[in-house]
Length: 327
Ligand code: LMR
Image 1 (cartoon, helix red, strand yellow):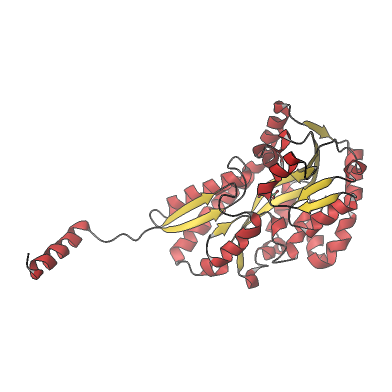
Image 2 (cartoon, rainbow, N blue to C red; image 1 turned 180 degrees about the vertical axis):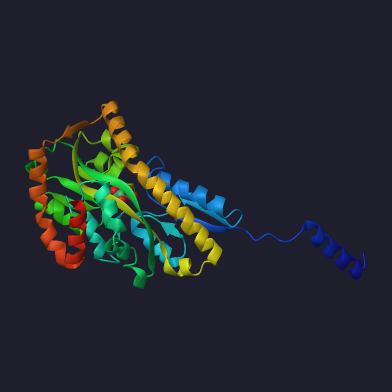
C-alpha cells in the first residue's frame, strides 16, 4: 500500500468504528466494614444509583473490609487523590476538626430520630463543611446506630468495667469515657479488633450490633451489654479538590445518587442492627445483657462528666442544639 492508500484506509477505519468513547471516570470508595452492614449496603446502593444515573460516565468501585485502606490512612489517601470517597465513623476525624467530637459524647442521643433532628439542623449541616480548609468536603451523614459494650466478662454496672482494656476508635472523647470508668482504653484500627479480642490483648470494645455480628466479635466476647450508650455514625467525605473539579453533570448525578442512597440506607440501619442482635442471640456464642432503667442510669451518671470536659472544644451552642433535639 502506498502512503496515501494507508492514510485513506486508516481514516475509513476510524469512521466505521464511530466516535471514540471516553472511558468512564473511576470513583473509588473505600470503607472498613463488611457488606452486610448499614454502611456496606448504603455504599452498594450508591454505586448502583450513580451508575444508573450516569451511564458510561462513571465506574464506582467499592472496596469494603479495609481492603484498600484502614481508617487511619483513608483520609490522607483522599487528599492525595488515591481514593475519591470514604465514609469513616465520625469519631475518626479528630486530626481535622474538634467539632465532630460532639457525636462521641455518651448518652447524648437516645435514638436515630434525635440524631436526624440534629444532623439536619443548621449546626449539624455546618459540621459537614467544618474540614473544608483542610481539603475535606463532607457530603452526607450515614447512620449505623447505637453502640453496645462487650467484654470477656459481664458488664452490668460501671464498676464491672474497671481495670479492663477496651479497644476504642481514635477519639479523645471515647478515651475519656473509658477513663471515667477506670478502664484502659486503647486506640486501634477496626481491621485489627477481632484479632486483638481473640488474642486477649484487649478485653472489650464498644460497637453496633451489625459490626459486632459481621466481624464475629461475639464469638470472642462472652458478654454484650445492651447499653445504647453512644452513637456510631459516618460522614461520607471526599476531597474538596476532586469534588469541585468534577464536570457539572457528573457532580449533579453523584449528588442525586448519594441523596437517594442516604435516604434509603438510613431508613434501613435500625432494622439491620435489630437483625444482627437477633442473630447474635440465636448463635448462642455470647450472652446479651439487658439493663434495667436503674442500671442504665448508673452508666449514664458515670460517663456524663465527659461532657463538661469537651464542651469548650466542641462549642456550647452545638451541644445545646443537640440536647434540644434529644428532648
Ligand atoms: C469502628 O472502628 O469500630 C467503626 O468505625 C467501624 C465502622 O466503620 O463502622
